Image (cartoon, rainbow, N blue to C red; front, side, top):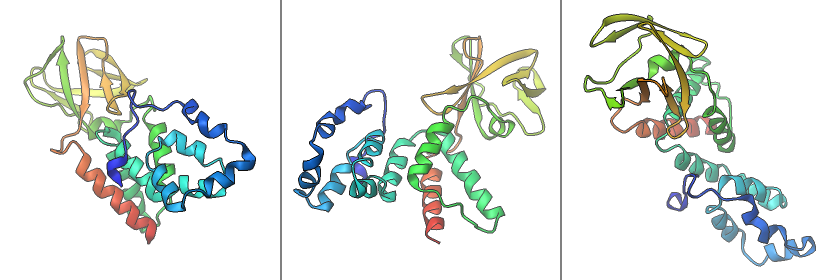
Amino acid sequence: MSSSFQSPTADNEIDPTSLSSLSLVDPQHQEHDQELLPDAIWRYILTFFHPRDLCCMALLNHDFYNWANDDALWKEHCLARWQGKQSIGRMLRRHQEHNNRNNNDHRTLTWKQWFGWAEYDKTRPIISQDEMCDYAWKLIYNGAESRMGLRKFLPNGTYHSPYAGLCEWALMDNRLCFMGLQLPVTRNLETWGWIIGPGTATVYHSVLEDANNGQAPIQELVESISNGNRA
């Protein structure tokens, strides 16, 4: 089933008007046309739909509402959409940690809700101090990548520079303040990570440190949430 999914990108976004052939169906014949195909075929057809179009399909009638909101369907869309996205692992880990602190009292969210929440979170413009410390950072100085390795901002407010030694850092008004610099922090809409200092000579890109670029932990956390929702 998962092989049929494609993550929505600029190249394969589907305009809602692509459903015009469905919207032009005479409502009085809609149920008759639906009955021409078995339910299983309709479910299979829906696996090829863009998430936005699934939301449109859910408005047609009760059957399409149930099929288009199927949790397994949206789980597959989550896994496809989240490939290579940096913020997902942290989002799911925070959910798991919350449940662990509350004796596994899982807040049951559907995978459609998870999908929507992640889409909302990717546009969040303010980085937290915890996030600064969670990521490693790749330095691009004057357009060239540093050969001194990834950098880390530590929770105690210190940063070790290979050139300047131990420095202090702080976040103020979504700017990184350290070494006499005040660098703005913005989202990386491609990776759902962060960029420090865009448009300046000193630019940092957030990086996931694990060898699988965060995908194996995400897969495991997705399954742990699935198991928790069934508990």
